[in-house]
Image (cartoon, rainbow, N blue to C red; front, side, top):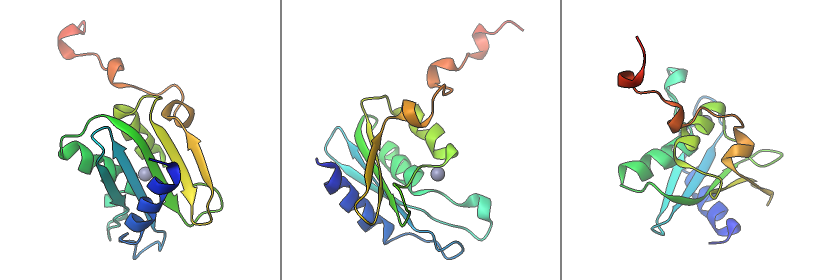
Length: 138
Ligand SMILES: [Zn+2]
């Protein structure tokens, strides 16, 4: 799937954003290896910290549907440059993405900047860094 096609789906997802507080609408589209595309939008809440970003909405939908392997994600908002994921989303993406997954940062004017998760979150704390309790010396 071309990056432009995935961005077009993210734009559709953006139209469903629930952003009555900020007015900042974001859409995401996540392409799984199965060929399925999972859409996500930001979902705000009156208790602001309960807000969920578009990227996490998309990946949580995918994981809950049984998809664990991904090809690409597109993220779009009305920004000057490609819409960049927040730090929380970067940490969630690194749980499931390796550097073969293309992350397309897009805006509504046709800008598409492609990145890898290592470029977005260098030195990340990754799943392999977790030490199980039974291996710790207490
Ligand atoms: Zn985020």
